[in-house]
Amino acid sequence: MRSRRVALGITLLVTALVTVPVAVPAGAPEAHAVSEQQTKILRVGVTQEVDSLNPFISITRTGTDILRTGFDYLTVYNQEDYSPIGSLAESWETSQDKLTWTFKLRDGLKWSDGEPLTAEDPAWTFNKMLDDEVARTANGSYVKQWESVEATDEHTLVIKTKVPQATMLALDIPIVPEHVWSKVADIGAAPQFPMVGSGPYTIQEFKEAQFTKLKANPNFWRGKPKVEELHFIYYRNSDAAVTALQNGEIDLVNRLNPTQFDSLESNPDIARNKAQNRRFNEILINPGAATFDGKPIGDGNPALKDIKLRQAIATAIDSKTLVDKVWGGYAEEAQGYIPPVFGEFAWSPPEDLKREFSLDEANAMLDEAGYRKGPNGVRLDKQGKPLNLRLMTHAEANLDEVAGPFVKGWLAEIGINITLQPLSDNQVNESTTRGEFDLAFSGWNANPDPDYVLSLQTCASRPNAEGKGNTPDSFLCDEEYDELYNQQLQEFDRGKRVDLVKQMQEVLHDRATLVILGYDNALEAYRKDAFEGFPLQPREGGVIMNQQGYWGYYGATPAGEGPVPVFNDDGTASASDAETSEAADEESSNTGVVLAIVGGVILVLLVGGLLFARGRRRTADERE
Figure 1 (cartoon, rainbow, N blue to C red):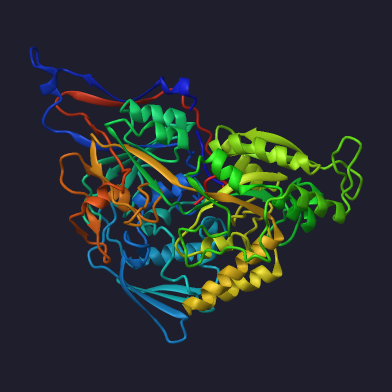
Figure 2 (figure 1 turned 90 degrees about the vertical axis):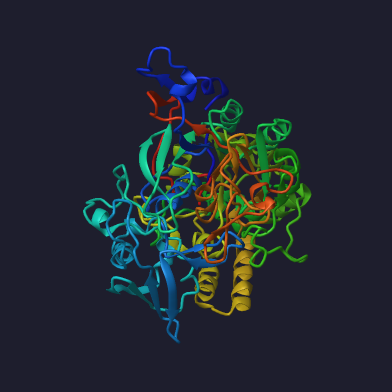
């Protein structure tokens, strides 16, 4: 469940990049001291805490966004339309029974430290996930049905599965270097910096609640990026991040609210980008949290085990009002679990299943289910206790802050008393993972292949008693849903698989362990005086940040350095057309060219007063 934020006043304490002259020769003009060489730095403002930079652990939007620039994959989604293309693997084939997959890795691959990258590295990565429950925390669903993994030579990786698996070209698993990670005693621990990677950038430094710094990787097989350093700078709220953008302290930011986005329209130095998002927003309803083996955990209100109560709550939440009042029209109304951007798999309830917002209908449902009202108008549960429920919100998250009172008011109209609980990101994430909630704001960024977010609702996605090993969402455990999930995973006929995925969304809609609130647009802005622009994904009307890949950051083009590249179907770059760097009316990004220790000038990054709580976030408000 993913989004995080620094009060506007604190922003004034943040001096993102300042130059301090050192030993400048007497009489030398300062402009010359800062002169001919410059370090090109893309400074990205983020409003969500990094959950972890451990590739086996991180699941949040910001964590995975950073890791995608630092670690490559066997295959990636192309810039054009999310179709899978080769990355570390240049080719692959599968056996007739679809149980054996053979990937051929490219020649000459290297890690950022110069060591060869061979088939032994993905073999070690995947086998670690097969053998270690903690290593499966972020992406365990991909390997659940695997039999074995073997590197038969330095270029050949053979994966055998127990059943046919339709997601084998959509393995969203960062490949790690065996020569580094095989020496790590605790696979779930925070990594050491600098990190050794294979992506376009390497992660150099991380400071909690402040920043993550990366440098261009000269060994990246596609070629070194134009931007030499990539900095992700944390702000506790989007107001602070927007102020920093306007002041030139950062160059690129997303997750703007409508007021902020509209306010930047007239700024000549800032370009905007509005895109259809791959994110869905939801409210979780705790149906009785349990571990993967069925042992109850948490303190959710037991009344919510009743599907009739959950369905009535879902009927009393109005997506249209949220789209109009909370997102200012920059969103789409709720339909199914898969966002509309992935049109093939997206599902909209047919007329006979549509759940129209109606307080009268919700009240009638509760009357029929036996929840009578007490003398103060609050309904009583089956044990005669008032229906007092907690709604957990993320402090300083725009959706939670603005939508929370609407939800509280609607549910009061049907006799349910709601207490809003604004908590820090860390508190929300840990509490929801432990099942210590009644209702909670949440959401996920879905992938082009829907398997991962679908897996979050299976019985197997529930954690162990310590809250580790798997990534839960709503704690749903439903036999019909699980059976459909297994069928879609094994279905290679695209049309049949699409139908199964839609059936799964119908089950989710009926069980009402979550209520889809809507799909907000990605609202982004950048300083166009510093950057020509960024490749979007998908190429037409897509996003700059939080891509399913690294194209936006890898292709970032500083001002004056030519057109923004277009990445072809094979991932090679060519000159852009105008629409790639300038997204429709709005635009993509503008980032600062910043000076480093050059010509007697020291570049200092000061991020003062930004207090960050970092921890493992399995239920982050903006999860990947």
